[in-house]
Length: 395
Picture 1 (cartoon, rainbow, N blue to C red):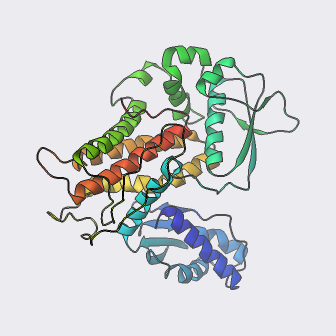
Picture 2: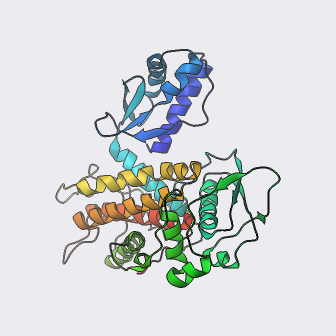
Picture 3: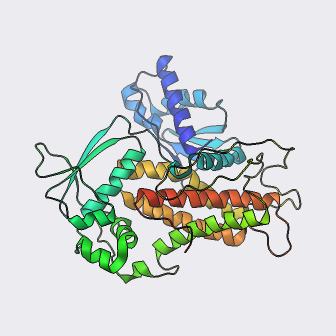
């Protein structure tokens, strides 16, 4: 069960409680679940009972009890606890199945992993000044909200700078709108699009303009062009390129990705080129029974290792990050998520190499590690695409 699945499960429980007249409150449009914070219990937590207590005219603890009864028996949910003033804490029944579901979702959805329809009922209109950072931010916000199902229109106070097109930016209209629109107003860049393109090129310029929160000044110095680990953009794109190289290396060694404890895929998914829709999921074949999740038939070692857990969690949380970035008009959240994924990818890669060394033969553990590495590469490519930045397969 993924975080998105759990959110839908809790929302369904709320609807059931309302339909059964156990709760008399409006059903929210969505239910937010978050990974449990340090010191908490369970895998995920939810505050929906606190939100419904007032409209339902019931104590939050009673609302939590009503919802717990309707969630605890759902497939994939192991334990549901009520903590504090009425928080619901969830422990998933089978982490292995949850991890496989996440990796399957990434493989099936490709670059569209994390896209959804939470904003499908929203028609948004954004307006910004004739300033390069505002224009690039509005463009990235457009991509984010569209990825969550919204319709959007963008206008500029004046005719757009012709150089914006080289940054991939376009506006739908310009001039003074007849009614106030939602403003996109980051701290100005202090440079024109032409100047940034000459110094940095389109990708580094976009990253520099989007990486900082809108209320912070953007860092637009030569450090954005450094080909080394100190440059977050390089690290993110290098992690993606390394993940793609692992797939090519595995093909030369005659094996493909296969999540731990999973029936093998009939053929590896071909990464979609930048800017194109991902290919459909390849068919699957069923093979002989596998070993238990997390074990290699040769030595019983955990294929993902302890370093794999942070990467798996970040990939599972990616849809929530995209939705939050869309709701808060904050592409910087996506940039920081990609940095975290890249960092966790290299930790995992160095601790649990997906490719065998020397004369070692590919094992179930290598196939499982490759599946996780490929998922990380797909998340990085999809996130960069939403920011309007290329994800090269070779660096």
